[in-house]
Amino acid sequence: MEELLYESSTTTAGKLIDTEARQMSIAQLNPVLRILRSVSGMPLKSAVEDHPIDDIRTIKTLYNYSYDSGMHLIRMLEPPGPNSEAIVGVLTSPPTKENEGVIEARRRILNDLEKAVCVEEKELIDALFNPWNAPHLHWRETNDAIDKILLTHFHIESDRDLLGECDRYLIAKTDEFMSKIAPLRREQRLHTAAHVHLRALEFLHSLQFQITTNRTIRNDKTIGDVQMDFSRICDSLPPVQGVVIQGHNPFMSLDEVLAFSTENAGEIARLVSRATGFVYNRRDILKGKDAIRARYALEVYLASINLPSNDNPKPIAVVHVVAAFCSVLHQRKLKSKPMKSRRYGSKISSPQKQLDAFIEGKVTHLASTAWFIYSERTLWYTQAMLGRLGMASSHKPLQTAQARFLKEVYASLDHVQIRALIDSYRSCMVKAAEEFVVLHGKHGTQYDWVHGLRRE
Image 1 (cartoon, rainbow, N blue to C red):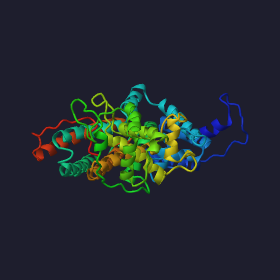
Image 2: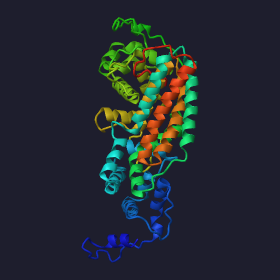
Image 3: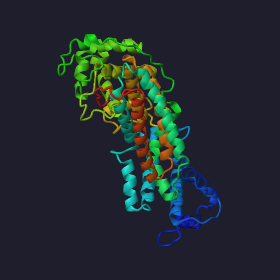
Image 4: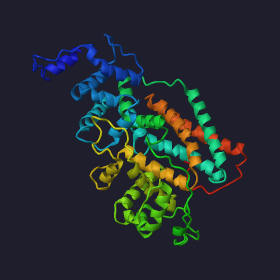
């Protein structure tokens, strides 16, 4: 406290600059101590006690930035809770005049905390959160590895009941894995715990959002199975590599979507009207922005399943194009709005306006909440038109169980433990999938698995 008071009232040369310096007591540290307690699990009493110098620097760093930025910064940095949807929206949205101060404060806190982390350890932490091995990518690749095994031996149509049973089997294996590793060791070095927490913040809030909502969109219209006849479009398409194109056969790249939509505007509009229950006209495709919006809805959907890839450079089928237009129309009619921060949320709250701002280059990236709405609805309409909603619904609880597991692991903030456990979990789930195949006598059955063919 004496250091904080001295630093606030003198220059670096020791000259007094504020004779009316702010009066300070340890009680003023309570908000900072509260967040550090919840992050690290350490007691950090509001009393005089000894701490390592790096811990004291961490407390001082957070206090100084929170004093300059206000309590809203502390609330933004707290662990996941009821406001996770709003916070993840702020953390992943393009900066605004309202939030750029706290976003910059967080960046500077990270830079200051990083100085106490040795070079070798910083490289390990960076590797855990870099764009090529980000937490959500590792999770997606884990499920790709599981699906590759299952969909090599089970048919996605005729073995639906077995795939649903497998989801329940994998949930039980996930719960069993969690019970074996509990209780998790927490990172005890306060500066390292705070640093890893700030690096993992978006992912932790995203996991909490998925757990709380079970991957649903608030106040949304229920989508039901509505199997469609795509023959009018498909009959006009030439075979690809000798294969007659059906509604579910991938044959198109993102670059081909706009031309395909223009050529088939009338039939796409008819299919969208039937799937959504809303009237839709071909002129909305030909003259409005919907074709471009649908193209971007497809792009975020494909990114969510790690496509396109070298193995599957043309992953788009007729059903995906129609589903993307359904997603765009559904959002315009329902006007679903994600929860947002009153103080720091973007004034552009409508997901469609956020998407348009991104398309027009007014912002550099699409807010994660808008991304979720368009990609998730594209997924659900795809499954609905293929008659697979039941299978997709049975897969949701597994994703939620995985989100709970990952939240517990990443909240330990021990980067060595995190890496070991997520790799161990992947191995455990792959083994469980293999066991399930053998258990049901399907190890001798072989299907060609294409990257991007997924159960959800």
